[in-house]
Length: 452
Image (tube, rainbow, N blue to C red; front, side, top):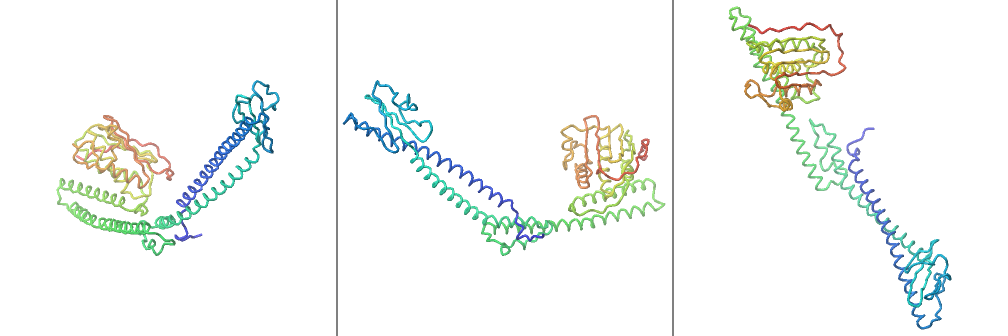
């Protein structure tokens, strides 16, 4: 069932408040019950001790006046007297050998006070049923009254807190349903609140409205920049590409100039690919770039051809091993930028040896025999603008950062393993479950030779 923002109130905060008050009421109830129980036991002991001690004092005062003063005999008390030196065998068995003071007798419901003086020992037995009932009823009434008062206060406080929190919950629910690219701030105007928001919530609503407007302006500026950059940056590149094509088509163009023009064209294509990569990264994640199906082998071949001029004058061999490269559906220039950056790094930091590119069914592996990286450098390799070797002036420290960000965008994670003096291995892995053609037999390495 569809629920409007006014009724779809999140229960997180109100539920936590309810649980807090329930827990508070339970703890309060336990504390009150234990307090009343302990207080009742303490009062019972004090009252019995004082009551029976007064009875004993009265008996001793009467005995001073009259040695034949009668022992207490009532419905709740019974006295016994044992002269000094006499046997206590005349006493009931449960009172024999009892020390001075107040004691509970076996069987419950009776206590005995033993008061010894020079003339003898006085035993006063008291039935506690009446005082126990009085303390019980008083304690129960106090307990019920205290619990009822606690529950009423907790309920009232909870209702008050809920009324205070409800506007915040409603506001949080409405804001959570905003489209972050185009938030509708009119939904949180004070007149739209189903509850009295209060001054604090009004200020919060106003602050959220201002923030949403600034975010909308920022998103719009980003969209405008992406659109304008896409057009304005491609226009001069198109001019360069057309001009170089015309000059290459001119038969009077010298051979050396043609080589330079080819490099200009490659640089223009590289720049266009990098611009496309930046524009892809600048787009919102739910806006898919233009994709097409392509063979990974074609991209790798193209990027290896472009990288060959960088190997001129270097004793470095470049080999390709095709073990069944997959076909992907994605922007091909995004993968081209990733491969180009990894190859450029391999060439830049390999002065001699070899660079092997291995195409697997779900990966591209680029291994070089260059200078390698330390553990510290390896942990910072993907950090933007980080460069371990500042003597290499042709790098800006952005290549690996772009590679990782593009890999995260398309689900192609990139990993690096390296050791100083042993070279570096970079691996691009593709999403599992891609439909793959039957694996061809491993091909012999295809060497690439730089142009003379």
